[in-house]
Image (cartoon, rainbow over all chains, first blue to last red; front, side, top):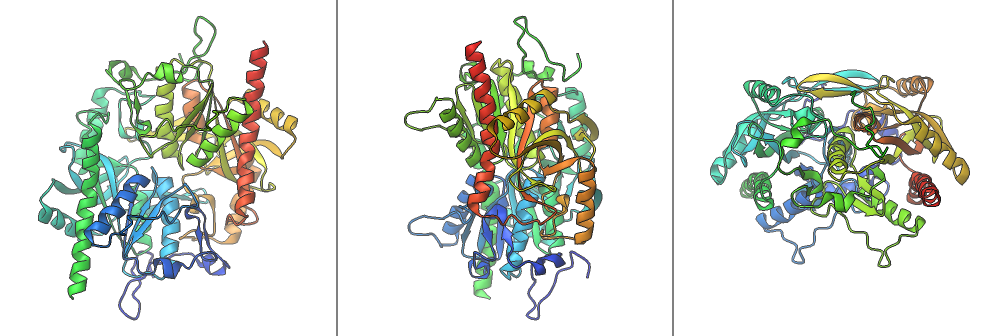
Length: 310
Length: 310
């Protein structure tokens, strides 16, 4: 079977799967950066019912999301306590309410990749089926009104190509960065139903650096001109790039390999054609950051309601 | 002047410098991921006396370090309160006691690069001089007894070459990853004085991924054999690689560009030739992680004592 094909169980549900024959030889599997493990935790009991996983860079935001989704689903804890499941480590934070898991991933491709390796193994060990995973993040927009939400069609690299380069044993392997188009369209439909903020579908450029890697003029180092920056961002725009962030390519590649239905939903905090510094007020930036949460919350609620009525 | 040459002031001290003519045109400079800025904070008053900056991935560890160094230097806060200077954000944590600054950087090259851009600008805005910066981290060792501390001679990539590739406007620029050899030798000397744990100088391989990128057999995906892994790690060892981590290359490159005297001191948590999982007890791993702190604490104390007596 090709990696990325979805595995159907006898009941017609889709498993999350790992591609690693060595895992079967491990007595226990320690998910070190989560401070969890198969020998120390009953992962099927803790996570077997997970159907939606939301991930984002900031631990505070992922805690806010679980509080928001609990209220949306009418599953609030009366004491409003949502314990951090990864309390034994400060690498990532993880929260759960009903079938929704919320996990932080830090900033950048390497940080989210460590989290995804361990999350995919966690979902596999917990025998989860039919899991949808959505990254809810922040980004810089190109030619969009700040606060616009971008649902990613394809994640592209700094040369605008839809690929992710994974180095394995010193050799570069190229991986596909396709996301689930049906899921993206459903999310766009949800935004229309909400009618609270502008949402578009477009390509997202994923970079390894926030300053020089995104043509910012305000880093510690900058060897190019304002015109060079504008030319680069215009070329990106012509290639269909709507926004720039730092995790979508490896997220798309790894979710595809493991058969997870995946989408990336990022709000744009500024228009990079007009500036580089994040100088909007704290309140404005905070309200923008709630938009992907509201959109994905609506999507999850809609799915769970439809399922309850079916 | 070549980037990387140290700038000497009239008094003979060395400034931290940025290479960005655009910064002078900014009215205020917002260090977004620190939640600090020139318009909102008096950076020279807050940070002007900084001489030693220690950085590490984990915020908890960087808080523990400031408590440790405060005790070592006899500068304890009687209430034992060391406020997080970046309390307005959850991206990084920052603590200060006397001339020592302790900053977390998360995991991976992109995460530490964002922090370093903003740290270098902070030190520049604060008019700091003669700053030494040391990364105190964790790593996987190759053929070393777990708990061995490695002081990095050169940071090398996954093909064992001493270079860091920075993408700027879609084009790759190669940067030098040399660290300060004199500083490394001083740190090795400090370890001999302490005589508490084994310490070596060697090359450090810096990768973009913890699992496939470091030839681990325990990730969600693994397409190679145990023999492939052993062959790769043996080649690394033959190229002088003593340990593997995920931040040293961009750290070395950016510190060199900004004229910071820099070293990387990482403890090895396991011997990768013998396994991949971090299955030592919490107590053992915790004691290993204190070793770079003890070594660097000794170095700082020695320097400050020598200065006080000179």
